[in-house]
Length: 67
Image 1 (cartoon, one colour):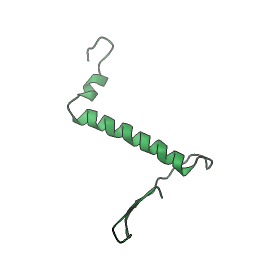
Image 2: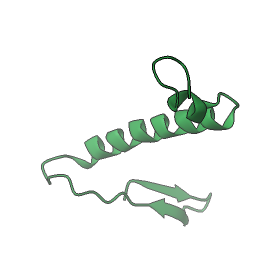
Image 3: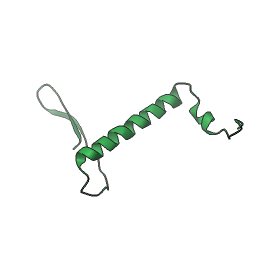
């Protein structure tokens, strides 16, 4: 288990598990850190795509700036 959400009576409200196929020598803390950074990157790109930056259009242009 990576994270557990509890209420004021210490009852588990939700829990999240992160499954991985990395070697067992890699600690859960390391895997959690990798996932944390990946999620930050995913959230950043979601922000870019949803906030009118036209990220998809920018990515489809060639080196001359044309589509």
